[in-house]
Length: 295
Image 1 (tube, rainbow, N blue to C red):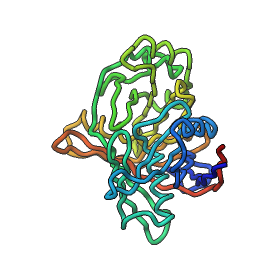
Image 2 (cartoon, helix red, strand yellow; image 1 turned 90 degrees about the horizontal axis):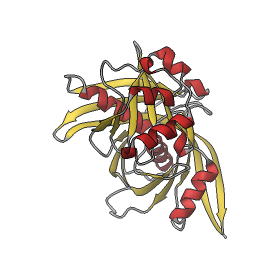
Image 3 (cartoon, rainbow, N blue to C red; image 1 turned 45 degrees about the horizontal axis):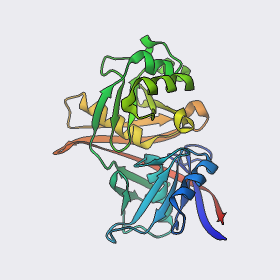
Image 4 (cartoon, rainbow, N blue to C red; image 1 turned 180 degrees about the horizontal axis):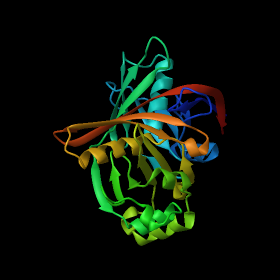
C-alpha cells in the first residue's frame, strides 16, 4: 500500500470554513495521473493539487491541478493555497516561487506581514485573450435570469482567459444575488456553441461602489458554484482594463457570500508589451491534515 499526506486549507480567507477549500499533496511522486483524477472526484472540491519535482531545477515545483471532472491548465485558488502550504513547509526561496503548470510558468510572490496571515500573489501565466461573444439570452438562462438582466454596456457575454477560460457577464447586484445555475441550460448552450468544446464556466459580476461582487457557476464540471475563483477574477480585472484607457486596474473582489463561504480577493491588471497581464492575491487558513492510502 502507498500512503500520501495531504494538507487541507481554506483559500481567500483568514477564517476557517470561509473561502474555497483545497487539498494539497506536497509530495505527490508515485501518484499516477488517473489516480489524481479519481482523488479529485473523491474529494469533490472545486480543485486539488499535486506537487511534483520541477522539470527545471531553477523552478520551485511542478504542480498539477484537478477539478472533479478534468485536469486544469491553471487556476487561482489552488496556486495561492499550494504556495502558502509549501511556504509553511520551508520550500520557498525567499519571497518568490515559480510553479510549472500546463498553462506555463506561474510566478508567485509571498508576503509575510509582522501580524496577520501570509499572503500569496499569483501572476497569471498568459496575457488576456478575448475569444468570442455568446448570446446574452443563453448565458442569462444558464444563471436562471432573464436576458435583459445581462448588462451589455461595457461588453456582451464573452469568453476570455489569462490561463483558463470563463464566460464573463455583467449583471446588477440584485440579479447576482438571485442567480441560480440551470444545468439543462448549461448543456443546451454548450451544445449550441461547439467552440466551447463542451466546457462552460460562467462568471457573473456586479460593480459596486467599493468592490466587485462575483459568482461562478460550472455545473458541467460538477461544480455547481465556486466560492472563490482566482483565475476568473484575475481575467475579469484584465478584461475590464481592456475596455478602459488606463495603464492599470485594481479592485477588491468578494465571492462566495451566497454560499455562506465569504471570500476576499485582491486583483490587478496592467498593460505590458505582450498585452494585458493580471494577478490575484489572497491568504489562506490551514484546517486539516490527513493521509490517503492507495493500493
